View: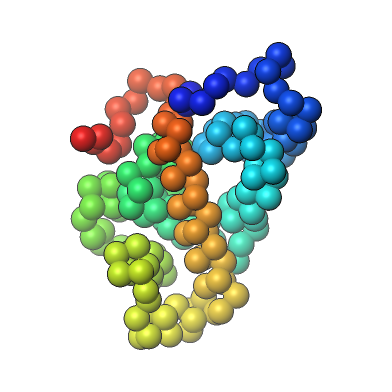
Length: 185
């Protein structure tokens, strides 16, 4: 990963930054992919953010397939290059088809084989496009997921919006020859 921030190493990190680096590297992620490369510059932000991220990524009531769909839809909303590059393969492994991810990436409405995927996509698009969820869609979501899982889904969207903004602001990029998923005009 690379960014426009100062590269941290053992010569220029504070003890708090080193503590957070060690905690992240020993955690379930095991790397500084994504926003952690930036957040480690502010250990006071990095600590709670990485804990929230661990919950949103590994422990919610939302199945991985659906959370990855929500994350990719977030990446498109923010045109977040690294977020898409990190999560697209995970989405495929979790069962989201390449046809669905490509439609989402291009800003087209995908054709879903599963009703729960359609529901997550509609909720996500409604929040990003209209900043609200209409009553009928909200009730469908509560009936399908339950209130606690719906709160988790909205938490996933909020957390990955923070991730996307961080990645975009600090130009966090993967070191890859792979073309960028979104044009940068």
